[in-house]
Structure formats: C-alpha cells, structure tokens
Image 1 (cartoon, rainbow, N blue to C red):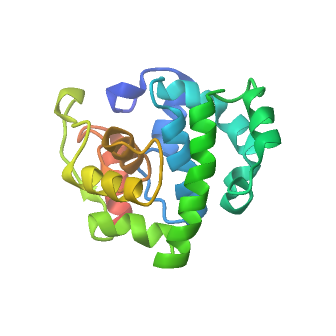
Image 2: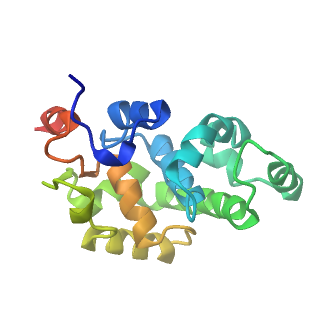
Image 3: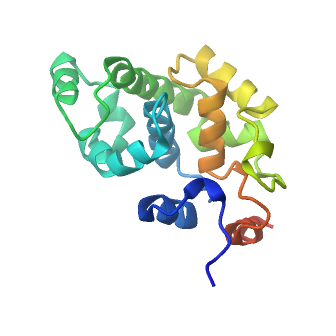
Length: 192
C-alpha cells in the first residue's frame, strides 16, 4: 500500500522526493533560507518542477548561494549566468538575486539574522493548517502579505505575496501538508 501524500506532488520521482524529504520541514539556517527565497523567485511564472530539476545547477552557478559573493556580482558574471543553460536565463531574475543578496546583508546587519527576521512573521513557530485538498489551500495569507510588503520595502525583488507564501510553505513556516498526508503528523511532531 502506498503512503498517502499531498496530491500536488504527483508521481514524478523528483517531486515525490522533494515532498517527502524537504517541503514543509522548518528551516532556520540564514543562508539556506536565502537560497530557498531566491529559488522561489526564480520559479515565478514557471512550474516548480522546472526549478527542482535545475536546483543543483543553481547552487553551482550562484556560488552555493553565498550572499556575500552574489552581492558583488558584476556585469561579466551576469553575462556568464545569462549563458548558463542550467538555470533560468532571465535577466530580471538574475539581477534580483544580486539585489536580494545586498538586501539580505542589510537585514543581517540590522536584525542580527535572516532566520529570526523571517520567523518573526509567524511568531517564531510554524502555522499548522488543516487542509484536505488543493482547493482549500490559499495562494497568500495575512502573514505572507506582511512579509512580502516588508521584504519589498527593504529592496527585495520577486517577493510578491504568492511567491512568499510558497516560500513559507517550503521552509516550514506554514505546515500545508494535507491532513491525510503521512508528512503532516511527522512534521508537526518535530516541533510540538
């Protein structure tokens, strides 16, 4: 008998592996959160599977998402990235990664940490929802609206509320696994 899973992950082994091992697991590492925010922004207008298949290439192309290095990217590096078939070659998204790295460094300086800053929008603990199917899952929330607005105010790009909500789901700030999914209780138990 197969495990009950959220229906959105389908049967693609890459998607299933992501669902089973990463999606919804709380992330607290500053640089990991930065990487995931950049990847969610890169996904805008595309399917998430596209980014999942390119994730390894993104880590190589963007210096393992080291914000200090990315913040200093020059035109030569941008041109190199625009030629890299292993990533989404979108000038706005590449420039946004650089702008976001610079904004990230300011948050570290001003707030002391990216993780504590982000998690403050959910009072430091995951929001646990009780959805049964995709039709119940919102595209945004009051928390994603607030975080999106604040990120934009700080200079971040590709951080609309829908992207931010997807990011919050991915990094476990929100547990949106369906209640009949085997990961719902596993993840919930990890922080209760």
